[in-house]
Length: 337
Image (cartoon, rainbow, N blue to C red; front, side):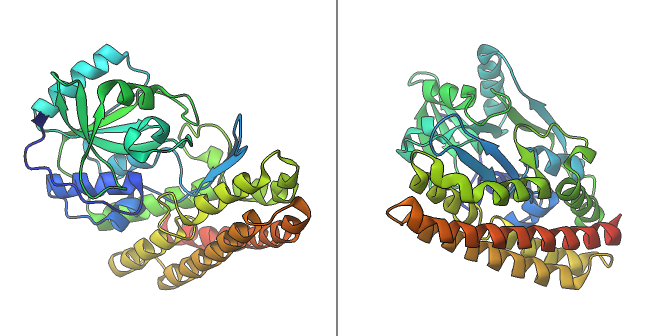
C-alpha cells in the first residue's frame, strides 16, 4: 500500500469540514473543524427534487464549501472536475506518492463500508493511499474512526455518480501548503460570503448547482412541506428531511450549531463581528433541532392524516426561521463588509 506519510485521520461532524480539518492537521495550519467550516463559508441551504423516493432533499451547506476554504485563506490548490478517469487515476497516484492527500467528492451509495441503499452526495473525503496490486484505495472518511479500504472500481462509481452531484470526477489537492491570510483577515470575507449567499445566492460568484438556494430554498422547503403527504412513501421523505436537519453530518440544527460556535470564535478575533450573532445563531440552531424532532415524529405516523398537523407545525416554524435568519444575515453583512 502506497500511503501518505505522516497523515493521521480523526473523525468529525461533517464530511467537508472534517476533511479540511484533517488537512489542517497534516499541513500544520492549526484550525479545528468549526474554524474550517466557518472559513469555508460553510453555512447555507439547498433544496431540490430527487428522481425517486425520498423525492425531496436539502443541505444546510452550499455545494462549494471545500473550495471556498482554500480561496479565502489564499492556499495554493488544484481543483478539477469532469476529468477523464485514467487521467485522474494517474494524478491521484502521483499525488499520493508525493505525500499529498487528495480530496474527492462521492456518492455514499457506492462506498461499501457504509452498507447503505440510499444515494447521498456530494460526500467529500480524503484519499490517503492506494494499492496497485489489489486495486484498492485507502480513504479518510469523517464518519469512521479509522481509514477505510475500498476497491478502486467502487471509488470510480462513487465519483462518477450523477445522483445529486452537479459534476463528476471532482477532486482538490493542496499545491502550496501555506495560508497567505490569517484567521482575522479571512473570517470577515468568509462571513460576508455566507451572508450574501443566504440573502441573494445569485450575487455570489459561484456555480450554485441544482435546486433553490439560500433563504429562498428554506422558504421553498416550508411552502411545499404540507404537500408531502401525497408522495407514495411520505414517511421516508419526511424521515430523510429529519436526517438532513439533525444527522448526516450536520452537527445538529441543520449545520447552524457549528456555525454559531465559529461566530463565537470570530467575534473574539474580529471586532466587526457582533458578539450577539453567535448567541442568535445558537438559538436558531436549537429551533432547527426542534423542527427536526417534529419531522421525526411525523415520519413515525401511520398515515397521511395523522402526519399532516406535524408537517403544518414544522412548515410554520421553518418560515419563522427564514425570517430570523434573514435579519441575522443582514446584520452580519452590514457589520463585516
